[in-house]
Length: 158
Image (cartoon, rainbow, N blue to C red; front, side):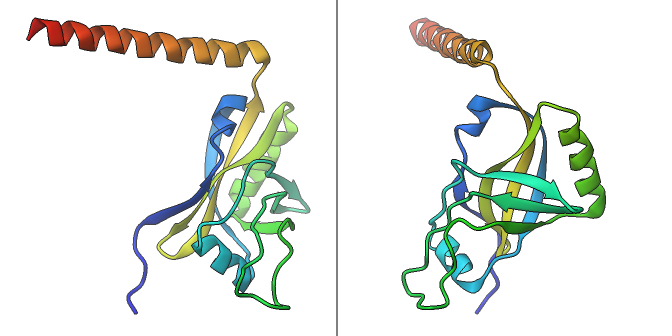
């Protein structure tokens, strides 16, 4: 059987970019059990409440929901368990310093398979205030309206 190539996205945290200002992103491997991998390959995972943290010089991912594998039996995994992240020591130290700075947190952005290996993209992010969220929505709406107006102007010119 040929090895997998490319990237297959399993789950994304679309609300993260709305709720947080993202400063840095990192790709990390995950320590998973067999049924977790099978469940991820079936495209089942939820990142909504998930977060990551540094504890004892190790990175951990918590509250990410990977449902039990339907074909599994007594070997099934708990759906919301703490999972170890695989990062280089330098990256862990850098992330740790950034999160201790204050106001910064670690959030998962997406889970995907890169060349057959399960990966998670985590971000060092700062929570947005309510007025920042409104400002972002306003900017997006203004850009959309200006693009529509320019498109309409181009079509009239033809």
